[in-house]
Amino acid sequence: MRVFIVHAHPEPKSFSGAMTAAAVEALTGAGHEVQVSDLYRMRFDPVSDRHNFTTVLDAEYYKQQLEEAHAAAHDGFAAEIQAEQDKLFWCDVLIFQFPLWWFGLPAILKGWVDRVFAAGGRIYGGGKWYDRGVFAGKRAMCALTIGGPPPIYSEQGLNGPIESILFPINHGMLYFVGFTVIEPFLVHAPARISDEVRRAELARYRERVLTLATAPTLIYPKLADYDERMVLRPELRESARPGR
Amino acid sequence: MRVFIVHAHPEPKSFSGAMTAAAVEALTGAGHEVQVSDLYRMRFDPVSDRHNFTTVLDAEYYKQQLEEAHAAAHDGFAAEIQAEQDKLFWCDVLIFQFPLWWFGLPAILKGWVDRVFAAGGRIYGGGKWYDRGVFAGKRAMCALTIGGPPPIYSEQGLNGPIESILFPINHGMLYFVGFTVIEPFLVHAPARISDEVRRAELARYRERVLTLATAPTLIYPKLADYDERMVLRPELRESARPGR
Image 1 (spheres, each protein chain N blue to C red):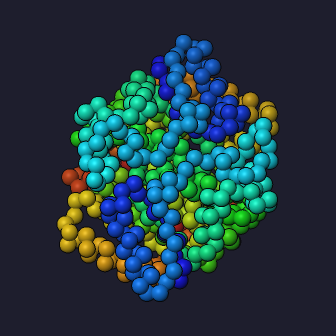
Image 2: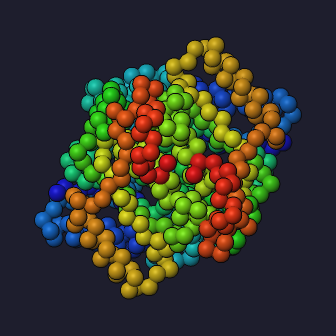
Image 3: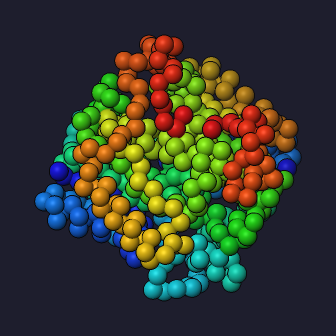
């Protein structure tokens, strides 16, 4: 199994750092291959603009999706974008490792998606999305730390259900480009747990990364379940749709 | 009325650019005051780390919220963060102007939130959140362009309901720090509409920004509606909760 971890935390000693270290150790120890993009260490620039590309379609008016499609057709992605795309094609499983900041990805990881997930058919587009996406057959998972305790992220919790908060990431980013999405791995309030609970959480995470190939996944509808306006067919509306 | 527009688009000629220009013109023409943070033009750095601060609490282990609280107590925010916080305190209404990228804020704006919305009681914390938040009494609104047509973002649409997609922003960022959240202003597929429709959409936006003080808002529960675990009291669970 080839696992690609995109890691987004400014402090190597953080619990996120410990999780990625544990994952790398467990996976390589079991004979799997791992690549890690440690975005803070790489000083990855998350701002999406013309520097995504070595090519220029229209120097007067920057339309990002058209520049992406042009770059896809002319081998025109900047080296740091190309390198990340190559890792996506290389892997069997993609992991986003991050602390939940403001109910979403830290900007350095959001911008990795903004820049790397490019239009024009290479990563998505031309009918290639969701279950017909470029990465169909591969798996992906969010592994995240969350400041508050579980009740505040429950169905009736003050901050909203974690499934809803992660919907734009799990469905909108990972499933959008074709990945089958594994149930997220959540660690609550790592700053306020005992050393014993920390060790137990890391053991639980090692177990999860060794079972990525079979871990339970989120069930989403397929493109064929939608009508020509891209609205779910009425007879299918009782299906499970996590986070909606 | 004092209006603070945080603008996040790499192309000044874009429809987002036209919207902000129309808002500034309409508001100043009516005697209101406006400040715009044009994040791409400012080359705003969205990566949150030690450079948010001039102070250092712990040089060995970076815990962001503790560094934020320390900076809040010791006047230790970097000048570019302090300047944005000052505009938040100055304004009566905050507008986020952006194109919806990957079902969320462009990274440059997500990182503006990551860095500017700091813990420690200045922007939130110490019991100051949601309806008891620092910015209670002020209003905020998302104004966004969306690539696809409305049906794909409807309740049963392929991409998911727009209310759910915006929940982490409207509820998790704006309401979290106390703003009353105005219904978002959406423009679908600006790249594929006629000049006549564009003009009509800009006229509709001018009208909206001139009525920000009275425009309909999203109805969320208040802190008093939650029990001590921060779970909504059972008798209130039929209340409207947009996007959940």
